[in-house]
Length: 355
Ligand code: NAD
Ligand code: DAU
Image (tube, rainbow, N blue to C red):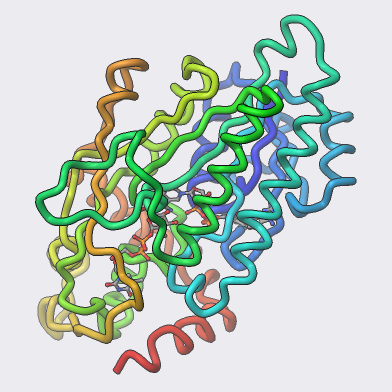
């Protein structure tokens, strides 16, 4: 028995692969990743020499490669993490998001349909395609509106969320039309080890440590629900093990906070763990021009996964954010390595015009 993971060198995918293989009795993983700017083999360094982890450098849009991998490894499930994942990049260059998130997911689904259709008996009945998606597909909530349930209408507002919504619709249609056994999860904002410092929390940590401005978009009162990445991984394991075929599960941490509070919490932890002689890190906070089309609020109603699968987050925000800041402080080499020339180009592209 083998799992095929796509995008397992990225932030959530690598956390999932490491968590899964931490169990000595776990099934092996074939990890297919294109190693875009967001994919990093260093995230998986702890698995060097572990025969249960087979890394394949390749694209989910490469049908011939997918067919070869399926024939060789005969996975009993696919966990589809691979995506272009950053909203700001989708605003600057939406093409890559359509290519990977829409066309790539389509190619993957077609390869899986051909493979699954040829299975028989128990192998066919037990086979699963687990699609990892986002709460952003539901759009933005008014401040007093109830949190997103699984039946909330799709109203994506950014090229990223529109491309993920399209992929969710493809996955749904492949179940409805062809019977492909799929599961979909829609999760809120993750944070934790190995997150690329283009996203809010790691960006604030690395900028603060470098004495650079901490760029808060607009008034900083946009609300997100924040979940520690290890809790997202445990939810995915629960859905894979016991999720009802064809169902959608929302995953969240019951932890809504405005960005401004998140940034102040990061600053306070750094003040405690790595005090700056120049003064409190919050002095570096700088309000900059807002993200175009910026969604004001996301909130996840996670009662379905809690009720049906008994899943609950293990970390509170206080414990999770402390672990995260400590991780970045103790992995200076990783942080330095990811701040390559292309990272610096992205920072210049995204922040230069924000003033
Ligand atoms: P990430 O950007 O850190 O990693 C994406 C990975 O996919 C990278 O390793 C990259 O190399 C790989 N990849 C990209 N295009 C590929 C292609 N064409 N073929 C093969 N591999 C490719 O993303 P993440 O934050 O780890 O997110 C993983 C998944 O979870 C995404 O589908 C995202 O939409 C979803 N998600 C993310 C969050 C979050 O807060 N980060 C929350 C909910 C859902
Ligand atoms: O909700 C789930 C989604 O969360 C995932 O699907 C996405 O892949 C993931 O990137 C994340 O999207 P966000 O746009 O919410 O994450 P990001 O870290 O980019 O931004 C979080 C909030 O912080 C958002 O309101 C924008 C704001 N922000 C972000 C950056 C990078 C700032 O104020 N300043 C910044 O420099």
